[in-house]
Amino acid sequence: MRKPKQSAVRSVSTPNSTRRATVAGMGAAIAAATLPISASAQSKDIKVGFLLPLTGAFAEAGQLIKSAVDMAVEEINKAGGIKSIGGRIVPVYGNSSSPDEANTETNRMISTEKVSAIVGAYSSGATISSTVIAERASIPYLVPNALADEITERGLKFVFKTVPHFSQFAINGAQMVKDLSAKAKRPVKTVSLVRENNFFGNVVGKAFSAHLGKAGLELVKDNIFPTNPTSFEDIIVALKGQNPDVVFAAGEPSSITLLFQQLKELKYWPKLGWVGCGGGYTNPTVVQNLGSLAEGMLVINDWFPDINRPGSKELNERFKKRTGGKDLLGNANTTYAAVYILADALQRAGSPDGAKIRDALATTRITSGPATFMYEQVTFDAKGMMPNSLLIGAQVQKGGARVVWPNSLKVAEGVWPVPAPR
Image (cartoon, rainbow, N blue to C red; front, side, top):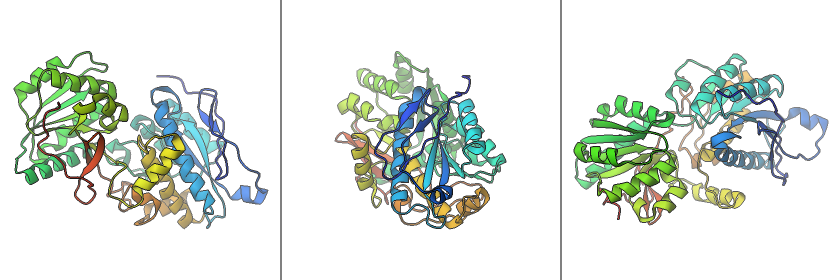
């Protein structure tokens, strides 16, 4: 495990700042310019810590999330900030590329920066460890990225999670294929799983093993492949023997491309369809590389830009304009919503005090406004989990991901059974 980074520089964003943030040192934190403000106004500003992967394998995702945070904070501050407190939200960025780094930055944010709340920390490992530090300091911690069920199962009172559990890939995914099959009058009974031997793949495997049977579906086989595979021939031959109705799969973009190329070469396709779990299957690069091979591929994930919710398309276009054409995906969407959820709690708390913000978060009820592009309603249960957080289904149609499930959010009809790639 890498040692935690030592360099850390506070980052501040304002609604009128036009200078782009730059990584300082190893990227443990980011510094941005501010306009002069009076001492009295400055004392009322509310510091919020944002833990992002600013270095390492997920640095690109971290920068995308940071763009979403900056956008939300600028909008809120431009509209008057947190009026009940009389100050702006001031973001303080820290690196969470590993649990050790996330822990170091959490301690810095609490002891040195005196943040009133923390949002983070991208990965489940970094989030599980850093939330304990915040809990001990009575600092509310909003989790808009990490999916581990464990995060809200430990009895922590200052932790609130706005994204689905890993288990919902199995729960929501099973319901989606059952609904599509019922409409097509093609019963679905058997499932095979194809997953990468990494953290995400392993937790998805655990979720399907635990929950698929409860949905009335049989898991025929859990097929596991190594990271950076060179061939899928053995797995595809095994799938032919298993003959499942549906295949659910989890993998990184590079492995998905190779897999679909070999599915065509070896002339295999499940009887009803192939369902990808998570954002790797909707990565624009994957869809572009696969071309016609991606047509009809189903994916379950937390959000897609064309979802049937007010303001979603317009928000995505604003973000693309800001980022040079990048969609509000890769956890940028959930973090953007989290900033507005926290702002709502700050307004109702009327104070930068952590305990008061925690109580406000616990009584959150949002049914309109910017956060509802992501969620129909925002509330938290006694464990700090958001019951209305669920995964949705999209299908690649004519080169783009179109939402097809559930019915209340769909913008297109799902094609089911899915024809083999051509």
